[in-house]
Amino acid sequence: MLTAALLGPGAALGCGLAYLAIDYLRKVVDAPPRQILFVFIGLQIPVLAGWAWYSGGFGTPASAYWLPGVADIAAGMGANVLYLLALRRSPLSLMVPLLALVPGVTLVFSGVMLGEWPSLMQTIGIVTVVAGLFVLYSAGEPGSGSGVLAPLANAVRNLRREPGARLMMGVVVLWSTTPGFDKLCIAQSSVGMHGFIQVAAITALIGLWIAILDGPRAFGVKPEARRPLLLAGVLGGVGYVLQLAAYQLMLVAAVELIRRVSGILGAQVVGRFALAEPMTPAKIAGVLIIAAGLPLVLWN
Image (cartoon, rainbow, N blue to C red):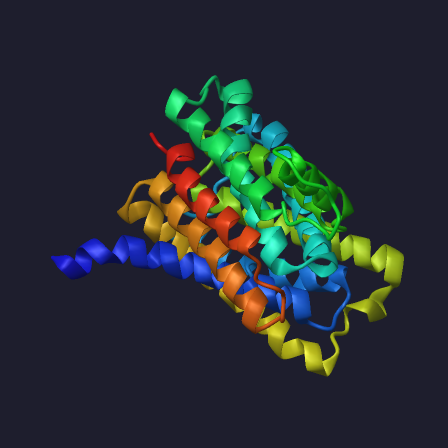
């Protein structure tokens, strides 16, 4: 009985750690960003094809699928491109915590798109997460001033100066739209077929992008990059399967909570010990505040 009760949280935690490992691999692998995305996303096609077959086959979606489906493809591709660029330009320990904004912004988009507005508790959670991010970015420079508003001014300045922050904010906006599109699409198609269409289309678009800009030779992967890219692709498939398994065993909000918190805390550990990124009191305090606010955001 205890083992069964732990399966859902274990799958959600495994999913979060798998995506954390993928973030690390995508940051350090020696390959062009477009090539990384093509291989990483393309290797997930067999996983999604298997899921589509398992869940009922490759039935043609209803015509109402395609408008939100195309929007979902555009948002997914844009988010993946910006996400990789943000990881390449800024520390992992500063970029991943910004994803804590995704559940809160998703609630706003869900309100606009689906009429599902956040509750009072969820609103408090969103404010708490934003406050945690400001604390995380609030470390000041010598002589940067003092007073009650100094940490806020420092946070705004640091966010503006961090090269990947604006890109990651774009990721937050785009990824926050996809749950609403997903919900509209799944009403017109099976879950597996929808996932397969999304991944196959994004891979095809990135492949076309590479072919036009760089030519066929750009598809060749450096020998030293093959293993980390292959591992990232495999972990992407594993993470997705674990995510689906966790959704079947526990509440979606609980799965997202475990994924986000494990990813944010893990990014601090990986950043410190694998990438030699500094661990400051502001980072620690900010991450703890974010971890306290996320359960409220996901409160149902």
